[in-house]
Image 1 (cartoon, rainbow, N blue to C red):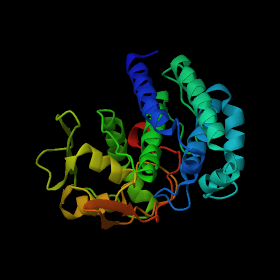
Image 2: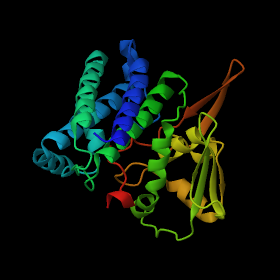
Image 3: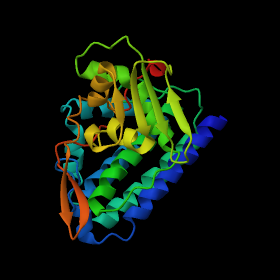
Image 4: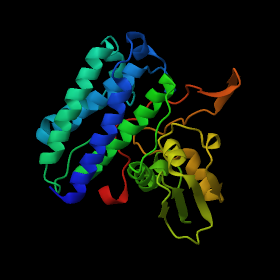
Length: 292
């Protein structure tokens, strides 16, 4: 197993542990709490992750059966994520958590055994195991963000956000394609402050179009968990402004984005309530040049 893939899997395990810690000990009624994703409860996000962990493992172990099952799922329309959520909505929280824990453990074991040079079937283009792990990490983090928002718990940023940020940047061509917009030729520089204070930079430093700010804000935007105006991102230039308004690190139809927050003060504290206008992302990593 290549060292970089092993490190990626370790990061996925660490991100999974964060979500497990948030879910363990939830009261039964908390599993039904509404999240910022329209129509989705805390439990819906967990069943979504578990379902696609099982699907990912199938792509590792039985790619031909995965191809058949994926075609059947997609034949019902692009709303398959919502259909899956509805199918498992009757499961109690304890069963959902057990399913997710079992599915994720099996997938991690599969990742540790896979040939790093293989091409894995998926709902979009085939991809490398490294891209598959990165996609699962991004989905775990993004769905975890919605869950923590519903629980009123703060998300602690870590350097694992670099995987999410990098995926969001590489998915820029896809973001334009699904919105039926021509891909601009002008370069965009992204400079982010990492949770440990380091500077993460993509693109030419002399680019006119720029996105600057902290990594947590950027990752929330490219996974469509926050409206750009509800973050501290500084976006300069028309191309950068257009891209950040449509950016998505996940594939599937163009996401509607997340509505701006409604700020409501309670007892002297400021609370942000995010309007539920954004559906949950599809567990399909957005195609990028390395995967085409």
